[in-house]
Length: 361
Image (cartoon, rainbow, N blue to C red; front, side, top):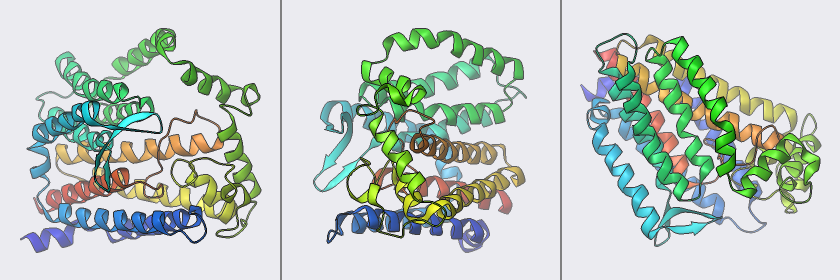
């Protein structure tokens, strides 16, 4: 039975697309590494291998193991987030990491998958067509609690990425249009109050995004250099390892948050366009799984995965192009980093497992 489910759940096109993106990410990390140093590249390959292995294991299991025990995963995620506040290590200004010898774990990334599962389970079990006040309040609390813990770690950018997951699942679950509209109005009205509580550097990032010339050598330096790198790639790019902006230290965090700028400079418009096309195809395959699913829980779980991946792509690419403030959001399957790479593969494994079991049923 497991063999049949495993075979049915594998979407070969999706797996090929994901593999190609991972390969391109590995090439980007290799190119970003200092000459003669292969440490980053080797570690990224290890994380990709672990992610693929975890994805294969998750696909072979019944997806109800993840949704039925969603409260357990959620409570475990909260426990890790609290543990980070007590014993976490500060890296790049954020106390978001648990360091276990040579291993660094970022629980805030794992929390996204836990929130995704608990929200899908909560809304899939309601006995009405549209979420009521109680369901919406419950969903809001389940999302807000981990967000607050992540904000306390000093990582506002990662905390904000929980919102697209919640919004996508709630909308697909049947949120009334008028509720959505009034919610957007409420958010806009609350924006001035939120602005007051932002830190000075966060305000400066937003203002510099609106006016790049406001602080071109300070807060706006990273974005400006990223734009120069992308533009200098031309149509065909400078070639792998030949990007001047990327390899002379002009673009900070080039191997992680700004890897799209590196690949755009070295592979040009054709390479950058190919990357975006691959993401579009991945999201299309996932949406197809949700559309064809016969189980409400499957639909909501896959919706959450789509929103998690798409929001990261939009925000990360927007950062590199100067359309959004640089808030430290990685690019799925391409950016250097173990926690988010493994979580992305785990999310894909859960989606494929949900697809598989849905078809078997």
